[in-house]
Image (cartoon, rainbow, N blue to C red; front, side, top):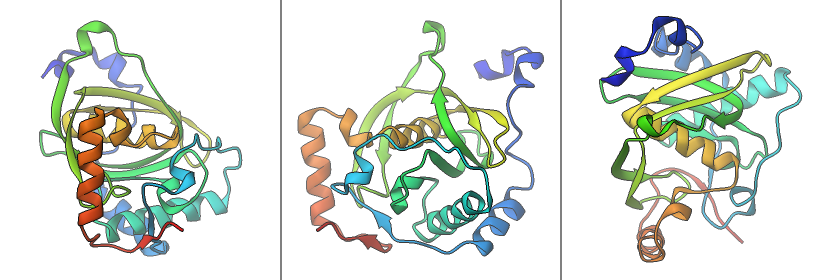
Length: 209
């Protein structure tokens, strides 16, 4: 893939999130408490979240809870507002198209603007824990770079290709108030909401009043 042609000195800027994945995910999850998932219509999902400014034990506990919640819901990524918390944090446990597992978290993420030559669109199916039981085809770039900080406030960057790139874009969208269905045509969005209305979530959700 094109990623393999990138100069190694550039790759050094990205965190390594492919080592000790099982142990790291399990440690977060075992310290955490699973929470129900907020779904489409909950106000916290439809506005930009607040920046993380305090890098303390409360933040570390939130990240642990997010990993626990992600596992309960059998997801590959989870944003803080998906468990009702108005902060720019996401976690992930996601395979890329080569079958390599990535596990990590990010606070205050910002996606890089890709140069034209890297904007190769992948028109694959996408789903969301906050739009349960619904899926739709959505074109996204098959490469993504997101920058932010970790739970200690240290600058980090994450690089993803294929399905993992989709995950990084999807979770960053969440923290700026966008669900994937907001990027669909009116017809496809309506169909996704119909699927959600007709389906039954396989995990606990927060009912909208």
